[in-house]
Image (cartoon, rainbow, N blue to C red; front, side, top):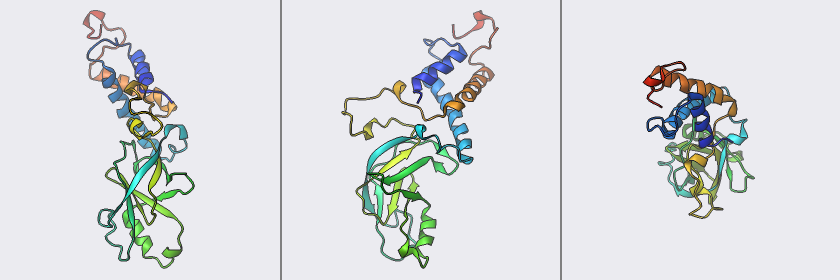
Length: 224
């Protein structure tokens, strides 16, 4: 998977910009890259084409769960007793698809039991059906940065998603001082979208006059 450093260098080469120029910073280029990457990923997710690219998804092997009440879990409509668990900490930022953050798998820590994504209102309706007590499906839903899991009494869950943030803090195999620089962080963007992203970034910069087009008088360039 390409890193942030890889893609910013690619776009910089397309733009023929000078790296040392204070205006055309890597941060600026990255913001434009992700602006259009997220737009194209959103379109792909609407067509159901994103989750097949397994290499784009990163894994948090374990997020602790804590017990919360049905009000916080947005399941006030449930009349009978029910245990609700919630991730103790907020999840890192994720890339959004047509139905919210793109989450590929939520499961038990060992991966043996997967949870099916739903909405609180849908789950409340399911609990009111006559065969609910016979259902063996485990569910989850996402609200404001947290994942909620009803019924199960697990201590933690495994999450596979399109994260848009460094996950070093969630990797228990690394030392606290073993940090990944932002430039080295892998980018969850399909390779086949890069050419289109580059053209979109180039078009925006040329349109707003932030860099001269090919053939412009070099003496007028702000990026010499």
